[in-house]
Amino acid sequence: MSTNLTPQYLEAEEEFRSATTPDAKIEALEKMLRLIPKHKGTEKMQGDIKKRIAKWKDQSEQAKKRGGKRTDPSHVPREGAAQVAVIGPVNTGKSSLISVLTNLEPNIAEYPFTTRLPQPGMMFHHQIPVQLVDTPALDPNVTERWISGLIRNADLAVLVLDLARDDLIEQWEAAHAVLEDLKIRLIEPEGKKVFEEHGWVAMPSIYLGNKCAMDEAEDRLSILAELFEDLPPIHPVSARTGSGLEGFKELVTGSMRLIRVFSKPPGKEPDMSNPFIVKRGSTVAELAKTVHKDLAQKMKFARVWGEEVYDGQRVAMDYELIDGDIVELND
Image 1 (cartoon, rainbow, N blue to C red):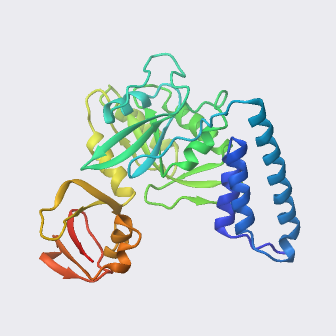
Image 2: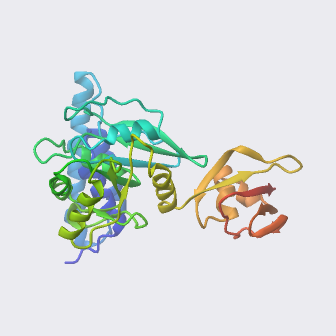
Image 3: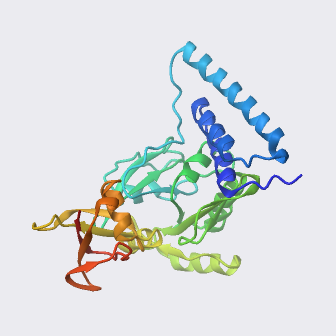
Protein backbone atom coordinates (compact mmCIF):
# COMPACT_ATOMS: atom_id res chain seq x y z
CA MET A 1 0.00 0.00 0.00
CA SER A 2 1.31 3.47 -0.90
CA THR A 3 2.53 5.60 1.99
CA ASN A 4 2.55 8.97 0.12
CA LEU A 5 5.33 10.41 2.27
CA THR A 6 5.58 14.20 2.03
CA PRO A 7 8.80 16.19 1.38
CA GLN A 8 8.48 17.58 4.93
CA TYR A 9 8.46 14.04 6.35
CA LEU A 10 11.49 13.05 4.25
CA GLU A 11 13.31 16.13 5.55
CA ALA A 12 12.55 15.12 9.14
CA GLU A 13 13.75 11.60 8.36
CA GLU A 14 17.01 13.07 7.07
CA GLU A 15 17.36 15.11 10.27
CA PHE A 16 17.09 11.84 12.18
CA ARG A 17 19.84 10.20 10.12
CA SER A 18 22.14 13.20 10.57
CA ALA A 19 21.52 13.58 14.33
CA THR A 20 24.39 12.44 16.54
CA THR A 21 22.91 12.72 20.06
CA PRO A 22 19.95 10.94 21.67
CA ASP A 23 18.06 14.20 22.25
CA ALA A 24 18.50 15.24 18.61
CA LYS A 25 17.32 11.78 17.48
CA ILE A 26 14.23 12.06 19.68
CA GLU A 27 13.38 15.52 18.37
CA ALA A 28 13.63 14.33 14.75
CA LEU A 29 11.56 11.18 15.43
CA GLU A 30 8.81 13.17 17.13
CA LYS A 31 8.75 15.48 14.12
CA MET A 32 8.48 12.45 11.82
CA LEU A 33 5.54 11.16 13.85
CA ARG A 34 3.75 14.52 13.54
CA LEU A 35 4.35 14.77 9.79
CA ILE A 36 3.73 11.19 8.63
CA PRO A 37 0.42 10.82 6.75
CA LYS A 38 -2.09 9.14 9.03
CA HIS A 39 -3.74 6.25 7.17
CA LYS A 40 -3.72 2.45 7.10
CA GLY A 41 -0.67 2.28 4.83
CA THR A 42 1.54 3.98 7.44
CA GLU A 43 0.29 2.26 10.60
CA LYS A 44 3.33 -0.03 10.78
CA MET A 45 5.69 2.90 10.21
CA GLN A 46 3.96 4.91 12.95
CA GLY A 47 4.40 2.01 15.36
CA ASP A 48 8.07 1.69 14.45
CA ILE A 49 8.67 5.40 15.02
CA LYS A 50 7.02 5.19 18.45
CA LYS A 51 9.28 2.25 19.39
CA ARG A 52 12.37 4.15 18.28
CA ILE A 53 11.30 7.21 20.30
CA ALA A 54 10.99 5.02 23.39
CA LYS A 55 14.41 3.45 22.72
CA TRP A 56 16.19 6.78 22.29
CA LYS A 57 14.47 8.26 25.34
CA ASP A 58 15.76 5.32 27.35
CA GLN A 59 19.28 5.89 26.01
CA SER A 60 19.02 9.59 26.82
CA GLU A 61 17.99 8.83 30.40
CA GLN A 62 20.83 6.34 30.79
CA ALA A 63 23.34 8.89 29.50
CA LYS A 64 22.08 11.50 31.97
CA LYS A 65 22.40 9.03 34.85
CA ARG A 66 25.99 8.31 33.86
CA GLY A 67 26.65 12.04 33.94
CA GLY A 68 28.12 14.33 31.34
CA LYS A 69 26.49 15.62 28.21
CA ARG A 70 27.90 14.52 24.90
CA THR A 71 28.43 17.39 22.51
CA ASP A 72 27.36 17.17 18.90
CA PRO A 73 30.31 18.16 16.65
CA SER A 74 28.01 18.53 13.65
CA HIS A 75 26.02 21.30 15.35
CA VAL A 76 27.30 24.84 14.99
CA PRO A 77 24.94 27.48 16.45
CA ARG A 78 23.75 29.76 13.68
CA GLU A 79 24.74 33.40 13.65
CA GLY A 80 24.28 36.04 10.98
CA ALA A 81 21.96 35.94 7.99
CA ALA A 82 23.07 32.53 6.69
CA GLN A 83 25.41 29.64 7.41
CA VAL A 84 27.94 28.41 4.83
CA ALA A 85 29.93 25.16 5.20
CA VAL A 86 33.40 25.52 3.67
CA ILE A 87 34.57 22.06 2.60
CA GLY A 88 37.36 20.58 0.53
CA PRO A 89 40.13 17.98 0.27
CA VAL A 90 43.29 18.00 2.38
CA ASN A 91 45.43 21.17 2.37
CA THR A 92 43.53 23.23 -0.20
CA GLY A 93 43.74 26.42 1.87
CA LYS A 94 40.24 26.48 3.36
CA SER A 95 41.44 27.78 6.69
CA SER A 96 43.59 30.49 5.10
CA LEU A 97 40.63 31.71 3.05
CA ILE A 98 38.36 31.83 6.09
CA SER A 99 41.03 33.65 8.08
CA VAL A 100 41.18 36.38 5.40
CA LEU A 101 37.40 36.59 4.99
CA THR A 102 36.42 36.59 8.68
CA ASN A 103 37.66 37.41 12.17
CA LEU A 104 38.51 33.74 12.75
CA GLU A 105 42.10 32.69 13.46
CA PRO A 106 42.05 28.93 12.73
CA ASN A 107 45.02 26.61 12.99
CA ILE A 108 46.90 26.85 9.69
CA ALA A 109 49.77 24.52 8.80
CA GLU A 110 51.30 22.69 5.86
CA TYR A 111 50.57 19.27 7.32
CA PRO A 112 47.17 17.62 6.66
CA PHE A 113 44.10 17.53 8.93
CA THR A 114 44.95 20.67 10.89
CA THR A 115 41.22 21.37 11.26
CA ARG A 116 39.73 18.69 13.52
CA LEU A 117 36.44 20.31 14.53
CA PRO A 118 34.18 22.90 12.86
CA GLN A 119 35.25 26.50 13.46
CA PRO A 120 32.83 29.35 12.64
CA GLY A 121 33.75 32.91 11.67
CA MET A 122 31.71 35.88 10.41
CA MET A 123 32.10 37.33 6.91
CA PHE A 124 30.53 40.71 6.11
CA HIS A 125 29.50 41.96 2.67
CA HIS A 126 27.79 45.35 2.48
CA GLN A 127 26.65 44.95 6.11
CA ILE A 128 25.27 41.46 5.46
CA PRO A 129 26.74 38.99 8.01
CA VAL A 130 27.32 35.44 6.74
CA GLN A 131 28.70 32.69 8.97
CA LEU A 132 31.49 30.65 7.35
CA VAL A 133 32.25 27.32 9.02
CA ASP A 134 35.68 25.76 8.52
CA THR A 135 35.45 21.96 8.41
CA PRO A 136 37.77 18.94 8.57
CA ALA A 137 39.10 17.84 5.19
CA LEU A 138 37.12 15.53 2.93
CA ASP A 139 39.29 12.43 2.64
CA PRO A 140 37.98 9.00 1.56
CA ASN A 141 40.00 7.30 4.31
CA VAL A 142 39.41 9.45 7.41
CA THR A 143 36.30 11.63 7.00
CA GLU A 144 34.06 11.59 10.08
CA ARG A 145 30.40 10.71 9.43
CA TRP A 146 29.18 13.68 11.48
CA ILE A 147 30.46 16.03 8.76
CA SER A 148 27.38 15.01 6.78
CA GLY A 149 25.09 16.68 9.32
CA LEU A 150 27.26 19.79 9.41
CA ILE A 151 27.03 20.25 5.63
CA ARG A 152 23.31 19.42 5.47
CA ASN A 153 22.45 21.91 8.21
CA ALA A 154 24.10 24.78 6.32
CA ASP A 155 22.35 26.98 3.76
CA LEU A 156 25.19 26.69 1.24
CA ALA A 157 28.31 24.59 0.71
CA VAL A 158 31.57 26.04 -0.66
CA LEU A 159 34.00 23.45 -2.06
CA VAL A 160 37.62 24.67 -2.17
CA LEU A 161 40.22 23.20 -4.56
CA ASP A 162 43.94 24.03 -4.75
CA LEU A 163 44.95 25.30 -8.21
CA ALA A 164 48.64 25.36 -7.29
CA ARG A 165 48.93 21.56 -7.10
CA ASP A 166 49.32 19.11 -9.95
CA ASP A 167 46.80 16.71 -8.38
CA LEU A 168 43.76 18.89 -9.12
CA ILE A 169 41.94 15.96 -10.73
CA GLU A 170 42.62 13.77 -7.69
CA GLN A 171 41.33 16.54 -5.42
CA TRP A 172 38.10 16.71 -7.42
CA GLU A 173 37.61 12.94 -7.36
CA ALA A 174 38.44 12.56 -3.66
CA ALA A 175 36.03 15.29 -2.56
CA HIS A 176 33.17 13.99 -4.68
CA ALA A 177 33.81 10.39 -3.59
CA VAL A 178 33.31 11.44 0.04
CA LEU A 179 30.23 13.51 -0.80
CA GLU A 180 28.72 10.59 -2.70
CA ASP A 181 29.36 8.33 0.29
CA LEU A 182 27.62 10.89 2.50
CA LYS A 183 24.75 11.09 -0.04
CA ILE A 184 25.28 14.79 -0.72
CA ARG A 185 24.80 16.08 -4.26
CA LEU A 186 26.09 19.58 -5.00
CA ILE A 187 23.85 21.71 -7.21
CA GLU A 188 23.94 25.26 -8.58
CA PRO A 189 24.20 28.01 -5.93
CA GLU A 190 20.76 29.44 -6.75
CA GLY A 191 19.12 26.04 -6.34
CA LYS A 192 16.93 24.99 -3.43
CA LYS A 193 18.17 22.54 -0.80
CA VAL A 194 16.01 19.45 -1.12
CA PHE A 195 16.01 16.35 1.08
CA GLU A 196 15.37 13.46 -1.29
CA GLU A 197 14.49 9.81 -0.90
CA HIS A 198 17.01 7.21 0.28
CA GLY A 199 18.88 9.75 2.40
CA TRP A 200 20.17 12.00 -0.39
CA VAL A 201 20.23 15.79 -0.24
CA ALA A 202 20.64 18.29 -3.08
CA MET A 203 22.84 21.05 -1.65
CA PRO A 204 23.30 24.54 -3.18
CA SER A 205 27.02 25.05 -3.67
CA ILE A 206 29.85 27.23 -4.95
CA TYR A 207 33.22 25.95 -6.19
CA LEU A 208 36.38 27.94 -5.45
CA GLY A 209 39.81 27.47 -7.02
CA ASN A 210 42.24 28.77 -4.39
CA LYS A 211 45.80 30.03 -5.09
CA CYS A 212 44.81 31.32 -8.54
CA ALA A 213 47.85 33.62 -8.63
CA MET A 214 50.28 30.68 -8.72
CA ASP A 215 52.01 29.60 -11.93
CA GLU A 216 50.02 27.30 -14.24
CA ALA A 217 46.86 27.58 -12.11
CA GLU A 218 44.79 28.57 -15.15
CA ASP A 219 46.21 25.68 -17.19
CA ARG A 220 45.29 23.15 -14.49
CA LEU A 221 41.75 24.48 -14.41
CA SER A 222 41.50 24.19 -18.20
CA ILE A 223 42.61 20.54 -18.06
CA LEU A 224 39.98 19.79 -15.41
CA ALA A 225 37.30 21.36 -17.62
CA GLU A 226 38.37 19.19 -20.55
CA LEU A 227 38.19 15.97 -18.54
CA PHE A 228 34.85 16.48 -16.80
CA GLU A 229 31.70 17.21 -18.78
CA ASP A 230 29.29 19.80 -17.39
CA LEU A 231 31.95 21.09 -14.98
CA PRO A 232 30.31 23.75 -12.77
CA PRO A 233 31.89 27.22 -12.68
CA ILE A 234 35.02 27.24 -10.51
CA HIS A 235 35.70 30.76 -9.27
CA PRO A 236 39.41 31.59 -8.96
CA VAL A 237 40.45 33.24 -5.70
CA SER A 238 43.62 33.84 -3.74
CA ALA A 239 43.87 34.04 0.04
CA ARG A 240 47.38 35.49 -0.36
CA THR A 241 46.63 38.35 -2.79
CA GLY A 242 42.89 38.80 -2.12
CA SER A 243 42.07 38.26 -5.79
CA GLY A 244 38.46 37.22 -6.38
CA LEU A 245 37.38 37.50 -2.75
CA GLU A 246 35.00 40.43 -3.22
CA GLY A 247 33.42 38.60 -6.13
CA PHE A 248 33.03 35.53 -3.92
CA LYS A 249 31.25 37.57 -1.25
CA GLU A 250 28.88 38.96 -3.88
CA LEU A 251 28.26 35.46 -5.21
CA VAL A 252 27.37 34.14 -1.74
CA THR A 253 24.92 36.91 -0.82
CA GLY A 254 23.50 37.04 -4.35
CA SER A 255 22.91 33.29 -4.67
CA MET A 256 21.08 33.29 -1.33
CA ARG A 257 19.07 36.37 -2.37
CA LEU A 258 20.04 38.38 0.71
CA ILE A 259 19.30 42.11 0.75
CA ARG A 260 19.47 44.96 3.29
CA VAL A 261 16.46 46.96 4.43
CA PHE A 262 16.86 49.93 6.78
CA SER A 263 14.27 51.02 9.34
CA LYS A 264 13.12 54.58 9.90
CA PRO A 265 11.06 55.47 12.98
CA PRO A 266 8.28 57.99 12.15
CA GLY A 267 9.60 61.54 12.42
CA LYS A 268 13.21 60.44 12.92
CA GLU A 269 16.29 59.75 10.81
CA PRO A 270 16.76 56.19 9.49
CA ASP A 271 19.13 53.81 11.24
CA MET A 272 21.73 53.05 8.54
CA SER A 273 24.08 51.15 10.85
CA ASN A 274 22.02 48.05 11.54
CA PRO A 275 19.93 46.84 8.58
CA PHE A 276 17.39 44.05 8.60
CA ILE A 277 18.54 41.21 6.32
CA VAL A 278 15.71 39.65 4.30
CA LYS A 279 15.32 37.59 1.14
CA ARG A 280 14.92 39.37 -2.17
CA GLY A 281 11.21 39.53 -2.93
CA SER A 282 10.19 39.92 0.71
CA THR A 283 7.24 42.23 1.29
CA VAL A 284 6.59 45.06 3.74
CA ALA A 285 4.25 42.72 5.64
CA GLU A 286 7.00 40.11 6.00
CA LEU A 287 9.43 42.77 7.20
CA ALA A 288 6.89 43.89 9.81
CA LYS A 289 6.66 40.30 11.12
CA THR A 290 10.47 40.22 11.36
CA VAL A 291 10.42 43.39 13.48
CA HIS A 292 7.63 42.04 15.71
CA LYS A 293 5.24 39.17 15.15
CA ASP A 294 2.16 41.31 15.92
CA LEU A 295 3.23 44.43 14.05
CA ALA A 296 1.91 43.35 10.65
CA GLN A 297 -1.62 43.09 12.06
CA LYS A 298 -1.45 46.51 13.68
CA MET A 299 0.12 48.36 10.77
CA LYS A 300 -1.90 51.05 9.03
CA PHE A 301 0.58 51.84 6.26
CA ALA A 302 4.26 52.09 5.38
CA ARG A 303 6.43 54.64 3.62
CA VAL A 304 9.48 53.73 1.56
CA TRP A 305 12.54 55.62 0.37
CA GLY A 306 14.41 53.78 -2.40
CA GLU A 307 15.34 53.42 -6.06
CA GLU A 308 11.91 52.17 -7.19
CA VAL A 309 9.80 54.80 -5.38
CA TYR A 310 9.84 58.50 -4.73
CA ASP A 311 11.00 59.55 -1.26
CA GLY A 312 8.47 58.70 1.41
CA GLN A 313 6.05 57.01 -1.00
CA ARG A 314 3.15 55.30 0.73
CA VAL A 315 3.07 51.61 -0.24
CA ALA A 316 0.81 48.61 0.22
CA MET A 317 1.67 45.73 2.51
CA ASP A 318 2.51 43.52 -0.49
CA TYR A 319 5.15 45.95 -1.82
CA GLU A 320 8.31 43.93 -2.63
CA LEU A 321 11.43 45.35 -1.03
CA ILE A 322 14.73 45.85 -2.84
CA ASP A 323 18.26 46.20 -1.51
CA GLY A 324 18.84 49.49 0.26
CA ASP A 325 15.19 50.40 0.80
CA ILE A 326 14.43 52.57 3.84
CA VAL A 327 11.09 51.65 5.40
CA GLU A 328 8.95 53.58 7.86
CA LEU A 329 6.38 51.31 9.50
CA ASN A 330 3.30 53.10 10.85
CA ASP A 331 0.98 51.34 13.28
